[in-house]
Image 1 (cartoon, helix red, strand yellow):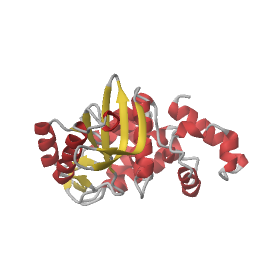
Image 2: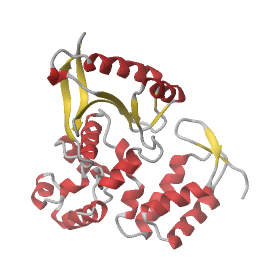
Image 3: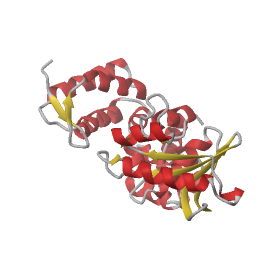
Image 4: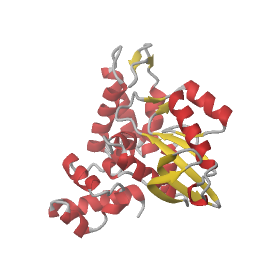
Length: 274
């Protein structure tokens, strides 16, 4: 195959690697026949500079047309997380739900008083006697990166909260979480300062994507049976999970047409295993 450079979301270019497409399609549950057909179409349309977003759209549309639900929904999870925006608050709620799925007790939007100053904590999580304060950095675009300035800021905040005079404001750890990636300097600093980082695929085998799949906690924005306006109405009511849309009454109350409710419920059930 000819060596072709493709353009990533952050503007950088890298050689096209068909095995990455193959792995992501297989992970989503696509059959070998459909994977081969999608890869064939992408190779046919491949050109220098084609964006990863264009490649994704080609694959996603073919999955919707040729695979059973919820393969396309599972393939779209990363984009679905971006769709939780633009304020970032639904992503904080979603992160809290992911952690609950892994046994944490969580609260969002908490105000704690440190030794030197008050701090607004996006997510407060507790499990096994450990109390963690979490700063969430949500990016609306895939090219966004969380850098060392954020790591420095978060480390200072949670050092202050570790020494809070009131036990109710004290934390044992501070985490910095993003839906995209960290810069190399942010990772280097976090490793040196013992600050926990969590991104889409970082740490490599325990990133957000792995936590989502393990707990079967998917954002409702990945459901292909809902329109964008329907998803927004549900998000505005602080409903962020696909497993939360099982109630026929809830869907009717949010303007979902009666004729499509069964399809929405079926896709959610298949995706989340409920």
